[in-house]
Image 1 (cartoon, helix red, strand yellow):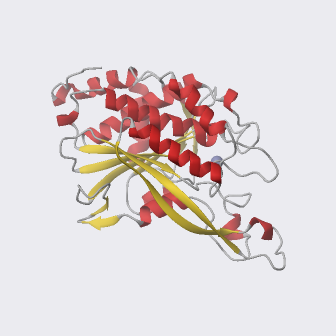
Image 2 (cartoon, rainbow, N blue to C red):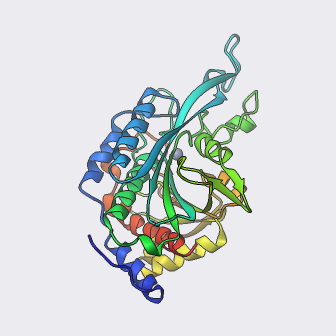
Length: 331
Ligand SMILES: [Zn+2]
C-alpha cells in the first residue's frame, strides 16, 4: 500500500479512511491457533515458547524487538485456601514481556504504547487456553503492527513511534483477582506482574515517564497507553471503563461514531482493573479497550478457538487503530 500523507487539516479524515481499510490478514486465524494449542499461564513452558514465537513474528515488521525478562514472587496455590505444612509461601516465577517498535516517525520524540496480555488464566485441573482472553488481542497487536508497516510515506507526519507490548502475567495465580492481597496468608499483589515490571523499568526524563527501546535512542516519553483485552466475542460490546482517562474514553466514543460503529460500545460503565492500572498510577493517560459484557466463557474451559469471532476483532481493530493513529499523530 502506498499512500501519501495529506496536510494537517485533512489528516483526520485521512486517518479515518486508513482505519476503515484495516482488515485482519489471512494469518490471523492461524496465529490465534498458536495461543490455543495449550494452556499458557505465567511461568509455564508454553508461555515461554509463545514469547519466542511473538518475537519471531514481530521481527517481520518491527524494529528493536526484544524480551523483557523478569522474576516475580507469587503465591503458592498449594497453600490456598489453607496453609499446607511444609509448603513454601511463595513461588518464584520467570516471565517475559515482548516488546516491538513500529517506526512511524523519522526522529521519534515520544512513544505511544499499544498493549495486550498474552498469558492464559490457569484453572486448576482444567484445560483452558484463553482464546479470547488473551489470544484475540495478542493476535490483534500483530495485525496492527503489520498493517502500519505496510503503509509507506507516513513517516514525516507522526511525532511518536508505536511500541507494541505483550504483557506476561496479567492473570492472578490464585483463583480470584484479589485473593493474593485479601485472602492469602502472606499478602501478595497477585496480578499484572508484567505490566508492573514494565512500569518499574521506566525512568523519569523531564516531567515524563520514559522508555529506551535500544541503545540508539535516548529515553523517550510515553505519551499514552492503550490496552486491548477480550475483543473477540460475537456480540462485541466495549465497556466504558471508569478507570481509563476521561479524555481517552471520550475519544473512543467519538471515534466509534466517526467509523459509523457506535453499536460496538456498551452503554454500561464499570471500573476495570487490568494492565493499564500501573501506567495510570505512573501518571500516563491510559485507555482500556475491553469487552467486559460477554463473560459467559470468561475464565472457563469453553473460551476456545472456534468461539473467537474474527469480524468482531476486526471492528475492534479499526477503532483501536484510529485511536492510536490520532494519539501518535498529535500527542
Ligand atoms: Zn483474564
